[in-house]
Image (cartoon, rainbow, N blue to C red; front, side, top):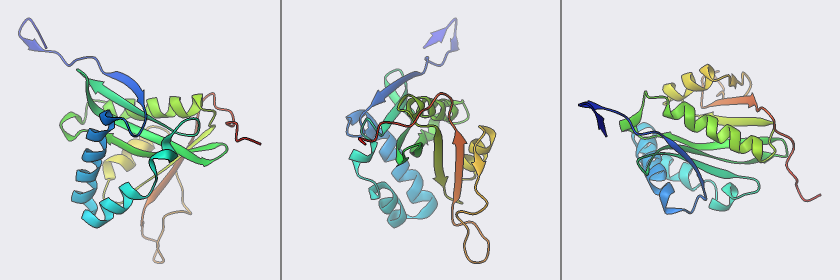
Length: 175
């Protein structure tokens, strides 16, 4: 889109979808490519196969996409970790759209969706080969666990973060 010769970015639109929705495919493909590049093909396959699609179904989970001109460019998902805590997974921004605030917007949208589902806390992990994610989570108020993710020598196998969510209450767990 252009305005008097200057290119203008379309307005991002947030959309909640099911993990099985075809619109999620670019997110999953982008994550597979990113994980493969950073951690190798086997690690990427393991991570993306680690959780069944149903883990992200309502009422305990959800998926949010950020779209530009109808095309997914960022997103994320959450699943139940415990009655008060949502675990965020699949936080992604298309490599062609980074450094525009879309990752922050996606994470904010996932936080809001988790809070609407009744969660009071968010938990997420990321790997040592994703320093951009580590920095973003810190900037957005996530607290790094000093006790989790360390190997025997004190090096980082992964980074675990947590954050209190605004407005959440424990979701109904059937009891």
